[in-house]
Length: 323
Ligand code: UD1
Image (cartoon, rainbow, N blue to C red; front, side):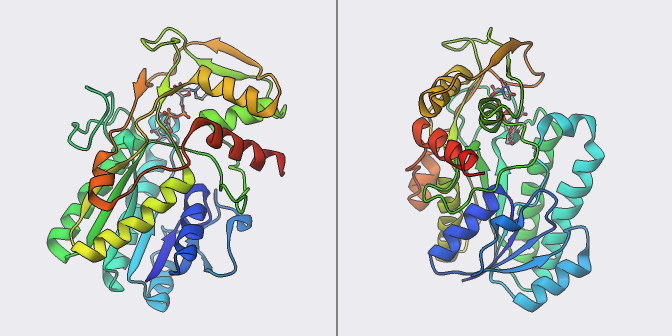
């Protein structure tokens, strides 16, 4: 299939491009390189530098390439920042996504795979969280993801666009074959921050609270390897093609790791101590967030294969070592 990947030079985007190419798809990347990296591009995929706020750039990209499928991962994703600067998230995540949707319709895209997030659920009312869980985002970032899911549902009804919304849990790790090592510029997520503390790029890791109702008191998350996420995108296209009906699925592992588990594994893998300090809880953080990924399995046969903690940390450590 001809597939356009918007945001394909980013962290999850580049792993997705690699997987789609490996599966024989013809891929073109559209990215403004604001957080994406040229280092993450592959010669087999054509590249168009452009911004999703520039509708004429989007238009010429899509009308030239004429893709049947499109993956949209071009978004800001810092939940904390979205509460302080919602305008930035409105413009990029909402207006930008609507631009993509309209241009996708205009150029005849049939299948749309959207990078959504577990942030659409908000504070979990039960665990593991399945797709029936109420959506009540706790931060504006999560709201922007939910809003796009709703626009997609309307465009399905009104325009016949078939979509898959993939609700990622905590994406982590780097390509298991070492083909992608571009590091995120200003990481705020736990594992990259742990890596920066290990290599001395930052003085220490701040652990946001150790008085949660979890086995060791620190926050528990469902970490999923980015190669597993990438495979999920490829499978979503197969499923859309097979059934021609839209769907929403969680991509997670149903396994929890605490902040201290991550620190411990990082120390084991690197052979070094992680300098860290316990500080106040970060506002809006739930104690635990674990996915029920059974729908992704029953619907499209998707199952995580590389998401054990050791592989997650080892592949990330290798990427940091290679820089
Ligand atoms: C965050 C976002 C989520 C988004 C995801 C991907 C929030 C509430 N959620 O998930 O919407 O989809 O990133 O970008 O912001 N931690 C520390 N010290 C740190 C960083 C993190 O102790 O310096 C802890 C957190 O408290 C949490 C765990 O590590 O318990 C994971 O945090 P993080 O990697 O930021 O991901 P989430 O907050 O789960």
